[in-house]
Length: 407
Ligand SMILES: Cc1cc2nc3c(=O)[nH]c(=O)nc-3n(C[C@H](O)[C@H](O)[C@H](O)COP(=O)(O)OP(=O)(O)OC[C@H]3O[C@@H](n4cnc5c(N)ncnc54)[C@H](O)[C@@H]3O)c2cc1C
Image (tube, rainbow, N blue to C red; front, side):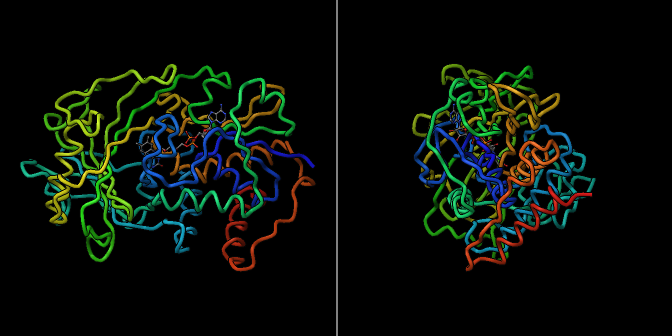
C-alpha cells in the first residue's frame, strides 16, 4: 500500500492529516515539535501554531482563491463548533477603524455582516477610543478556535483516525530516505532549510499579552464572548510601514489574549531582525511590547467590560507569522518534485494558518487525487469510534464531497 509522509505537526500538518485519513489514505506525520500540549510557557517563536488565539479570519496573508478556502474552512469549523469539546464557536466580532474603510473580502463568508454608517458615527456598543473623531468598519459573527483546547483535540482527532506521529527532525537527506510514496510539506518556516523556493518570505513578528483578570467571565456581553480588532489613527499607534497598527482582544477560557503587532523581518540562525517598534514600548518579562497593545486595549476593554486588565498581565509572548510572497503568489500550495519524491507544498500561511487549514488540507487532497499520486486502490475503509459515529461520518462526507465527488 502506498503511504503519505506529512512533514510538520502544526495546524497545517495535523489538519491535512485528518483530511487524508478521513479519505482513507495512510499517513505519518514526521515532526520536530508537536503542538498537542497546551502549556503557555513553552516558547518557540518559529513554531507559529503555539501562538494564535485564534480567529478564523484571513488576516496578514495572500492566497489564490481565498473565497474557496474560506468556504471549505468554514464548513469544517462549523461542524466542529457543533461539538462541545473542540473549543470552536461562533462569536460576535467588531473590526473598527478611525478612518474610512472598504468592506473586507470575507464579508460574504461570515455571519450577520453589517457595515458601520459611512458618516463615521459608528454603532452603539462598539469599542471606541475616547478622543476618536470617527468610527468605521463592520460587525459580524466569526468562527473562533480556543487553541489551548483545539490543538490537543485536533491532534487526538488525527490519531483516532489511525494517523501516526513520528518525532523526527528532518534534513534534505532524511527526506530523500523516506520510504513513503508522497511527501506533504507542512513545515512552516522550516521549509527554508528543507526545500528550494524562488519566492520571497516574511517572518512577521507578532506579540501577544496573556491576561487573567480575577473573576473575568467568558460571558462578556449578552451572555457570550465578544472580540474586536481596532485600528486607531496613526498618531496613536504608528508603525514602520507608515500605516496605523491595530490592536485586538480575544477572550478565552484560560486567559484573555491581547494583540497585536505586525513587524516585518527575517530569521537567520534563530535570530529575528526587522522593523523596529515605532513609539513607546512597555517591558513585560523582558519582552518589549508596543505600548498601545497594552494601553489602548486596556482603555477599550475597560469601557466595554468594566474590567481593568493592567494588573492582570501574566506574560508577553511573540511568534513569527511565516508569510510567503505577500505581494505575489502567496501561500505555497502546489505539487513539485524534490528529494526524489513528489512533494505537495502547504506552507506560508502568514497570520491565517488556522483560518485556512481546512481549505488547504482539502486542496492538498485534491492535488493527490487529481494527479493520481496514490490511486484509489490505496485508500482503506476507515473505521470510526462508535461513540461519535455521526460526527466522523459528517466530517468524512464533507471531505469526500469536496475531494472525490466533485463534478
Ligand atoms: C502572534 C500570532 C497570532 C496569530 N493569530 C492567528 C489567528 O488568529 N488566526 C489564524 O488563522 N492564524 C493566526 N496566526 C497564524 C498561524 O499561527 C500560523 O499560520 C499557523 O500556525 C501555521 O501553521 P503551520 O502548521 O503551517 O506551521 P507551524 O506551526 O510553524 O508548524 C511547522 C511544523 O513543522 C515542523 N518542522 C519544521 N522544520 C522541521 C524539520 N526540519 N524537521 C521536522 N519537523 C520540522 C515544526 O516542528 C512544526 O511542527 C497567528 C500567528 C502568530 C505568530
